[in-house]
Amino acid sequence: EGASSLDIAGLTRRTGLTTLDNGFVNTASTRSAITFIDGDQGILRYRGYPIEELAQGSTYLETAWLLIHGELPSASELEEFDARIRRHTLLHEDMRRFFAALPHTAHPMTVLSSGISALSTYYEDSLSVHDPAQVEAATIRLLAKLPVIAAYAHKKTLGQAFLYPDNSLSFVDNFLKLNFGTNAEPYEVDPVLSKALERLLILHEDHEQNASASTVRLVGSTEANMFVSVAAGIAALSGPLHGGANEAVLTMLAKIRDSGEGVEKFVERVKKKEEGVRLMGFGHRVYKSYDPRAKLVKESADEVLDSLGVTDPLLDLARELEQIALEDDYFIERRLYPNVDFYTGVLYKAMGFPPRMFTVLFAIGRLPGWIAHWREANGDPTTKIGRPQQLYTGPHERHLTR
Ligand code: ACO
Image 1 (cartoon, rainbow, N blue to C red):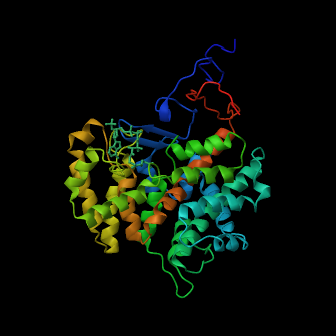
Image 2 (cartoon, rainbow, N blue to C red; image 1 turned 180 degrees about the horizontal axis):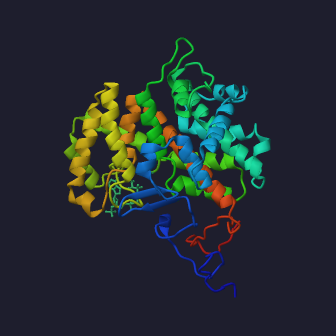
């Protein structure tokens, strides 16, 4: 009783059989047509397009459209999409009180996730999960306003006044100005910086069922609105084993530099599995070869640092660390390679972002993927509320003796 036959097509019916798969290493949580990864060969494609081609020839917004709608936009669709996003960049003035209520020491990722939840309170007209126009409105509002909240989180840590968005600028240039411009003097966007950031954002736009996208899908499966689902995704991204790794890599490199212990000694400590010591930015649940995104970021690092005229000993340290790790049996046997986070921090630092903003930049990059996943799940009639099973390991029945 209660056990039905295994529904291979849908895998949706209770079978009476429960599997325990810690961390979902072998269990698919969904079908998805958004992103393809071959972790053994280091292949990543969005809707069939190789990441290398998109990073080279697309823009953040064009790739966002591709992820969300499944096809590249026509020229007029892209123009309209871009124009709608530009029109929606302003935050409600009352949101100033939201920022004012937080300490300047608040981590920008926490400001971002609570800011997105707070944002939802202003848009009762975009919270429906069933009305396509409202889903579209939520999509546009999130894409337009999340970067503004991110930039204000940065400004808050600096104690500087918030700038209004400049809608004459492109998405990326507007974001740079909001972060690095001031009310005191004009701000000229450096095209090298702009191109590099656009590329990094494209590389981060989706990565199938990672912890944050799965969180967005799980929260969305309860028919929670897109804003709060994305806020939960930001929270999931913030951990050092996920998006927080880019900040952790820089902290690790700075510690190695400051301790003077040298890269080899540090690697020995990693191999001994000393408490809390991991080679951050190395290893990946899916990639068992070089992460294709890391390859592209590494290529950018030289180019960008050269054109910005920045020399950073941390980049040399990162290279040395990679070289040693890639030749060491511990890392070879476990198939541990640099992931996307290994070199991004060095680049973000060269652009002028403080380490605490690194994961926020990842979140801006990942937003289109979260939206695409939320919409894919929401539009799929076979989606059910996510409700994992557990194997109970607690005490047997017992009673109060009072
Ligand atoms: N440094 C040292 N050893 C490692 C590392 C690492 N970075 N990553 C994995 N290992 C070792 C583990 O100790 C384990 O060894 P064992 O078999 O002797 O016990 C083996 O490799 C397998 O590791 P798991 O933790 O089981 O691998 P999992 O797939 O669960 O973890 C993860 C993947 C979380 C990314 C892991 O590699 C890690 O912690 N990396 C560092 C953090 C990081 O860079 N995260 C960013 C990931 S990419 C992203 O989110 C964008």
